[in-house]
Length: 197
Image (cartoon, rainbow, N blue to C red; front, side, top):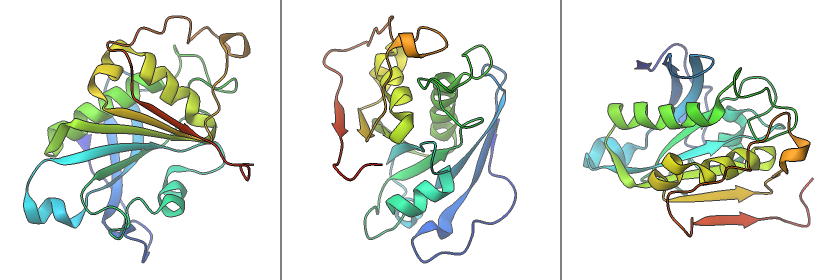
């Protein structure tokens, strides 16, 4: 069951005042309790029409709430219509990174899938406009989701900013050898900068 729980978001002038904790408990994922921040724009409450959903995955250097501030994706000047969710990883890394725990301990791909299900149940989401954005070291998870038969079919597009994607030999377990997207081509945007750390 998804619940919006506890506490208030830190005060901000960057559009984050509507961002609240969004926690899920679902026994189909490991661990069963996971956490995220959810931003629902004012336009959602005004128009009452299905909104796009963007899942913004933070990298190692920045926790989810900091990613919201850095990207300004919750700022109405840049985003008036999309629901944004900023999931938190368990530990330091997401799946697809050499430092990430194995899948049988932490199922990040399953978490993102279940998180989308819960948000779609709780809010009017435009099901053909669901997007994944991965920043930095979480590029591997964005790539894994693009390879997943279910995720690649339900997510409209994937974006990786300075994404770190590793070969299976660098990981604790093979993850990319079974890439089976449900459609081809899969819309993926990757970009890097000469100023990336």
